[in-house]
Length: 271
Length: 167
Image: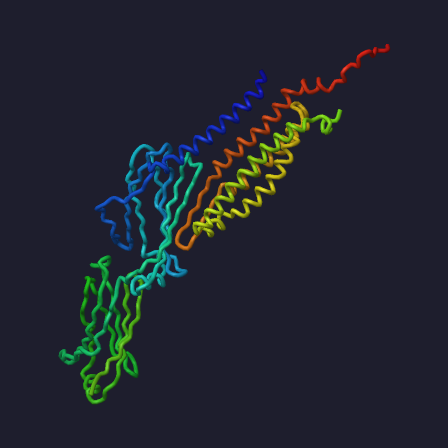
């Protein structure tokens, strides 16, 4: 008996058998449907906003009746607006043991504070198309096989603040003691996500020679918002315009969490 | 005593070893590859075939499969216990390891489409395959050592009938 030959041949057969077993035991559950992923019904997957953070929670049920555990299951989310990356993050890795169904709560947060001003402005005030890349990464077969799947999809993003309107045709001038109040009605809509949060409206009324008045309004937002921007001007100025009509420029800056939008309107006043 | 002499071998055993390796490393893989390519192209998966670099793999199969087949002839041709058989065995083993690594693209598979991407890393599994193939090299060493005395014995000149030793 040539023992050395027998030993090496046995080692080769053992390694071959191990490889064959790993491959068969890895592929079999996929073929028989023992590995599956589903999103549970009746789950509230709406994003929530706390402070500056938008949190998206995604519970998924991973059924693993295969022979190996799923290692380091990680969810990745990258949202970009053109070249601007809005968020790029990974969830905490989770191990899915074999022989059962495991509920995994994958939570992804988007910190508005960390988003660049330009990207934030687009998201707050503009209707834009965001590119969303959702990826799943995991190891299987004693981590000998690692797979990463990602799906890219464009996503229409509705602005958080929309339809801002300055009603320059219904400007009112009301006497206020020795001065006059100029009231400019405005309206806008806000996403449910930011209801209860504040929007700062900084306004200036400008004539051909300079700034006539400035005012700051703070609005606690609801879904539909309407109000008035009030400028106080002197009686002399008001009387002057009665006889000398002029187009006044109304400059408005909306500020939400550092994202600003500038709006201008012309008020034909006097005459 | 020339261990690489062509008079020392068995052509039949060489051809048998050659045919087995041709089927294993050339013909069978090529058939699978061409069937897969054809199925993918017919099924509209031409881009998948392109991204899997099936044409490159075909080239690798030819470039490494032909030398493996030719060198395996010599491994089978030379008798057990000879350094020549061991040498060709080791060269074939190295080429087979390279063949496995190249054909499996080092265990990295990437498919990238407009809206979908898949990356598969099975380098660990490929290294297990390479380990199994590399053990064959150890096997050739053990084989040579086991049969060495036998082979050396067969190389001694047989006495000629009727001859006598002159002191």
